[in-house]
Amino acid sequence: MNTDETITTFTGFFRDRGHQLIASSSLLSPPGDPVLFTSAGMHPLTPYLAGKPHPLGRRLTGVQRCLRTTDLDEVGDYSHLTAFQMLGSWSLGDYDGPQSQRWGLELVCDGFGLQRELLYATVFGGDGQVGPDSRAERTWRELGLPVELLGPEDNWWANGPTGPCGPDSELHVWTGDGPPSGTPGTDGRWLELWNHVTMRYERHPDGSLTPLSQQSVDTGMGLERLLMVSQHVRSVYETDLFAPWLSVLPSLWRPDPRSLRILTDHLRSAIVAIGDGVRPSSTGRGYVLRRLLRRALTALWHGDGGSALTLRELPPELVRDTAGRFCQVVESSLVTDVLAAEERKFRELAARGRSLLPRLYPSGRLTEADYEFLRDTHGLPRELVTELLGE
Ligand code: SER
Image (cartoon, rainbow, N blue to C red; front, side):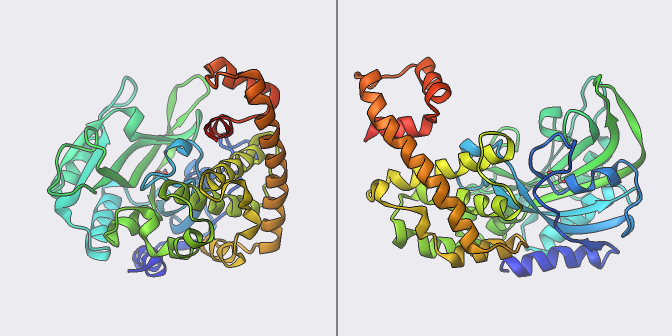
């Protein structure tokens, strides 16, 4: 099943069960939201999860574009992406968590062909404030899945320090060679696939919890991870979704495999952020975009072509493909202009680094304090300094 068929199968499954399709919202979270970017499917629905009636009713489904920067250092591995799409289903005070679990298992097994023997569920095991989620545990066991109980750091969902929150239950899939071993909490080859959150509480500024007026269910599954496991490939980059990038960049820039993944991830993310109106700057969202572009440039110049390579060569069809995938309309010339302007600034910075580093640190050995000084006083990011030292 390719990307389009996967999306249609997901939303179709829920539409057949009375859910209305909602369109993706912007990556820019509403004012007052504790996050810079929409990083989960539920963000645009926060008021409705807190009790406000949704105009389309109590059952919703959709695909939300998301951007997460918490995993930036893991980007380049096989499953972490900065910009991604999240498939979601919501019950706003309608059906309960166990119903969502049952449908979830039915869809991944019968709809997407995952093997039940390769699945493992985790549920909230309780903390000082809320007891273990025994209903979720019992439901997975009745459905024949092994279950691990984990603490709030793994199985509690909160949008931010305050607001709607609750215990969650995550479906994991085995991605290792050979038969499954260990548990999601002990073996990293269990890949987190689909999160089912029962939104039951409101968290207040003093940390206390009060029950929400209605109990809701919020689920989120990363589209790219689902494609990876349902298409039986070893990395999200090997799915059909990334084919346009992986068929063009290797011959264009000849990056090494890790740089190729970083370039693909960061440039896709930059296109989506630019498409939603973000421009590089030294604060907030603009700074995230700047960091993504500078990391992309560092990866680009890391290879044999060195700094003779330029992002101005990014083919317009990759911009169009990405914008289309994330349901945006973006002029490719606008993206190229933003990339070119940021590249110009970064080239000047690299030139400054090349003249400063040998003078300040002739030994080439830098302490943490040196890196901080170069970043804070000269605006030289660590990745660039490391790269320049290796030249
Ligand atoms: N809360 C879900 C998640 O990110 C989606 O809305 O796991």
